[in-house]
Image (tube, rainbow over all chains, first blue to last red; front, side, top):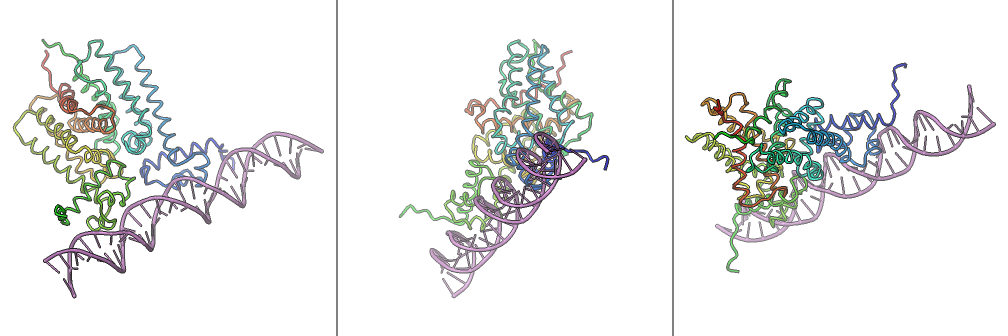
Length: 205
Length: 205
DNA sequence: GACGGTTGATTGACAAGTCAATCTAGAGCA
DNA sequence: TGCTCTAGATTGACTTGTCAATCAACCGTC
C-alpha cells in the first residue's frame, strides 16, 4: 500500500475540527451529538475527548481561531493611513471573503456564536464587542476629522454595521438571496456606500 | 377570602404564557424546563400540556401573537399615503415601542426566534421574511418614484434594516448600550436617518 | 354523577462524558 | 537485526443525569 499516508496525531486533531465544521454547519450545534463529529472524522468517539475537553471546547476553538483573524485584520486596517471609508470597506470585504473562502465555518460562527446571544454569544461577548469597537473607533475618528456627522453615535454605527453584514451573510447561508460571485463583490461595497452616505457630512448649503 | 378572584381556564392559559415569557427571557428557551414554566405560573406540570401540545408550541404562540401585530402594523403603514421615509420610521418605531412596552417578550422573540436561524428561526422563516419584504417593497416603490437610488438592491435593504434594528435591541437586552427613554426615542430615528441619507438620491449636480 | 380542569409521579429516550482495555511507534539495548 | 518496554493514541461500551411528554387519579362545580 504505497499511498497509505501516515497520519500524525496533529492530523487527527485537525480532522476532528474540520469534521466539526461540516457537522455543525449541517445540523447546527445543538443537534449534533459528539458521535456525529467522530463519525464524520472517521475516528472513535472517545478520541474527541482526548483532544478536547468538551463538545463546547471544539466550538470555542473553531470560533476563536477565525475570530482572532478578523480582529487582527481590523486592527491592522485601523492603524493604516487610509480614508475611514476604506477601512470600513476593508472590514466588510474581509468578512465577506471569509465567507467565500469557507462558507461552512462562517455559517457556524455567525449562526451559533455571533448571533446566538444566549449560548456562545454570551461566552464570547468580549471578543465580539472588540470587533464592533474597531468600527466605532473608525467612525469616532472620522467625526473628529470632520468627515462624519457628529449627531450619530459611533457605538450605534458599530452595531448597525455588524447587524447589517451578519444579516446579509444569514441571507446567503439560508438561500434568501443569491450567493453569486458578483453579489459577493457588490454587497460589501453596497453596505459601506449606504452607510457612509448617511454618515458623511454634506456641505450642501 | 373576599378578594379571591375566580380564575377561569382562560386565565390559567394566559398565566402559563406570561410565565413562559418571563422564564424564557431569564434563562433562554433551551435551558428552561417545562417544570420551570409551570412553577413560575403557579400551576401543575401537566397543565402546561393540557393547554399546549408541547414546549415548542408555547414559544410558537408567543412569537406568532406578537409578530402578527408587527406584520399588521407594517402592512397598514405600507398602504398609507405618506412618504416612504415615514413608513420606514413607523416600522422602526413600532418595533422599538414593542420593546419598550414588553422588553421580556421582545427579548425572547429576537433572541430565540428571529436571530435563532437554526431552531425557531427556521420554522418561522416565512413570517420573518414577510416583515423584511414590506421594507423591500417600500424601498422599491421609493425607487420607482425616483426618491431612492436604483443601484441599491431593495432586498438587501430589507435585511439591513432588520439586521440593524435587531442588533440594536440585542444591545439593549444585554446592556451593551444604555436603554433610557431618550435613547429609545433617538434610536429609531437614527436607524432611518442613517439608512435613508444613503438611499435618497441627491441631485447635487 | 359526569365532565372539564388539574395534579404530579412515572416513563422512556437521548446524549454527554468516563474509563478500562487495546494498539502502535519508536527508544534503548544487546 | 531483533527484542523489549513505555508513553501516548485510540477504541467504544457503559454510566449517569436530564427532561419532554404521558397518564391515571383526583377535584369542584353544574
